[in-house]
Image (cartoon, rainbow, N blue to C red; front, side):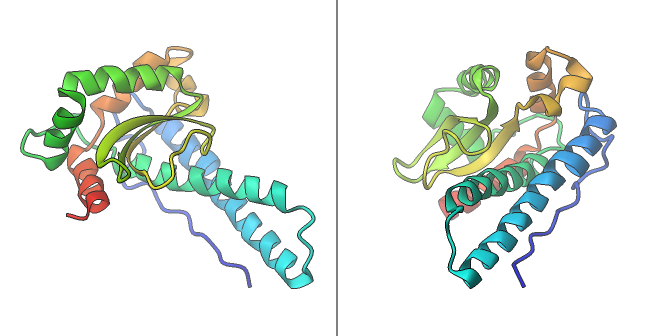
Length: 198
């Protein structure tokens, strides 16, 4: 039997965020995220069938679906794991020190992050990149176009329209502000520490 990926529940109540509604969180989690998990499971089943038959004639389409759905699942799970806070970053946190080191200041990082979020067609992602030992804000279209090998996402912002249009219409900038005001920086710090091996 093919491997089965499991959906993770929201780690907070759907109405716990300010500026991101219960309705959006429920649709986003229960429809969009769930579809990526389902799609990934469909890929697992298809790959098992291909291996059993030794027929890989459709491998390109299956593998494109695999990276899209796997990345969509992973990024959404981190997205919700780092929300539910008050947006305040404690200067005692390791992630605070690292952002200042790599971007010059928190304000400079915020400006770059917002710019990427407004330009992306999928995600703005603060990542730890072990290739140069620095933080980067990477622009990723869809879920997997623009991703960098080896880089570890620690703060991903979903900017697909399903994440904000119900609450903010075409005003993506207002949604980005809402997202930043709901970040749980202790959770981000944990992802950062795990990424750097602390």
